[in-house]
Image 1 (cartoon, rainbow, N blue to C red):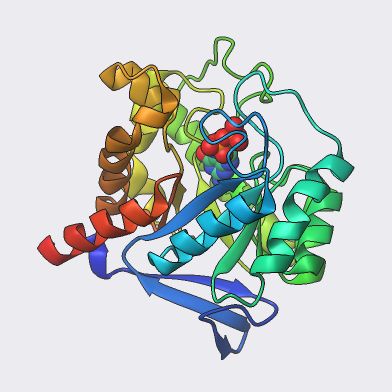
Image 2 (cartoon, rainbow, N blue to C red; image 1 turned 120 degrees about the vertical axis):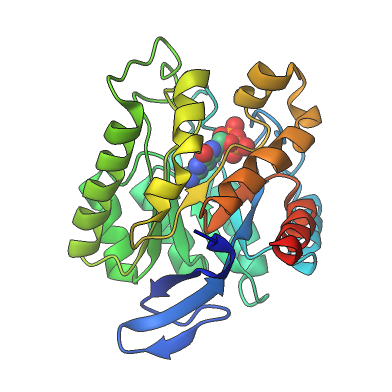
Amino acid sequence: MNWTGRVHELTFGFPVPGAEKGPHGWSVRWPGCRVMGILNATPDSFSDGGQHLQLDAALATARRMRDAGVFMLDIGGESTRPGAEPVDAATELDRVLPLIRALRGENVLLSVDTMKPEVAAEALRAGAHLVNDVTGLRDPAMIRVCADAGAAACVMHMQGEPRTMQHQPVYSDVVAEVHGFLRERAAEVKSAGVPSVLLDPGIGFGKTLGHNLSLLRAVNDLASGPDPVLIAASRKKTIDLIAGVPNAADRDPGSFALHLHAARHGAALVRLHAAGEMVQALKVEAALA
Ligand code: HH2
């Protein structure tokens, strides 16, 4: 199948940038694959930690990404890297709310990357449009927050929890288990009133290199369903294990190759640190299709 012309859709219960009003809410539609830019306002994220703690620096990065054609910004205030220490909701809110407030109304979709329903609720009130929850909205309170606000959500698969997830992850059939989990969660979340979901196999979240490669080779299977698929492996350890690049900041070339593969196999969105550069790569890829 040629995925470049496939049209993806996310629906919201309120107006968002680029949306058209339809019978079920406000829908954003796009062909091919678009880019979600990573903006971590944290001191300890594995690749961009400490770079966006100052509001001015974070806003400059955000606006550079938007001007380069990035579709959505994913704003996070807590690292989920393996071994990360949790932070409390007040700290997370202090980090993400000023960014969301400054960027609302700037013609770019805003996602909040959080596992906490209380952070998601405040972020949505401040102007975020989508909740990206790496726990797959397992907490019913998170589903309620998204449904009440009319926000879309990203449902991600993770085996275990960030502190321990890389300690010997085991699956009998990783693709069947992860895709089955995502399809079940999507059905439950949507039946509880969340208008639309993104599905994300959670590259690096409780998975070995072999598990990650199997999931990446099966993107077309996940993408053959009704929900748009997000792939997010930017600068992750997977790239080091394949190409021998110990320094995370040096992994952008591998990140581009990996996410171009995902785009070619049906991913609707790819999440990167070097987001503007990925927009350029996708434009060239689309012209050649
Ligand atoms: N990965 C990270 C964070 N959020 N969200 C989704 N949906 N999928 C992912 O794979 C994913 C995610 C980890 O990467 P990063 O944000 O760069 O680092 P950190 O968690 O250390 O802030």
